[in-house]
Length: 201
Image 1: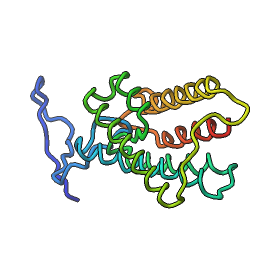
Image 2: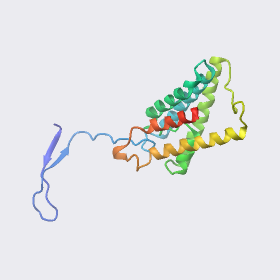
Image 3: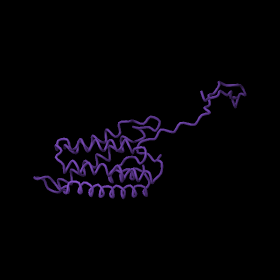
């Protein structure tokens, strides 16, 4: 079935060894590791970050400005994040967040120049998404602490959950937890749950 059997000689004893099966067909592609540098090229990776971040920010704007039940808003955003990570994880790593890209750079998972390109693409995608949902709803998302809270409290919460997001991304994609020859498939689910925790927290 597309393979041939060849007898090999033992290099030390000069005697025939067991037959070895060599495939004469095309070699199957290596399985891509999530959040790895085994990518199709920097241009494709940067474009993937732009598209994924655009969809994520656009979803945030839509659920914030529409009549969506606030109880379901974090779930909607988390689901969009999970889908985008599964879509683009093998292309760019599926960061979709400047904080995650910077964390990946500090962990030496990505070179500095690629981190800068990712952050630029993510910022531009966020701005483009903002213009889109502003055009749809003729309104802007209010940014600031909820009534009853101060700016410093909001800043602490944002820092804590952003740190948790970066920590989970680096953890579920580490070589120990997700070896290249047997990578896990729950990485996007775990990352999405961080968004749910932050949204309801």
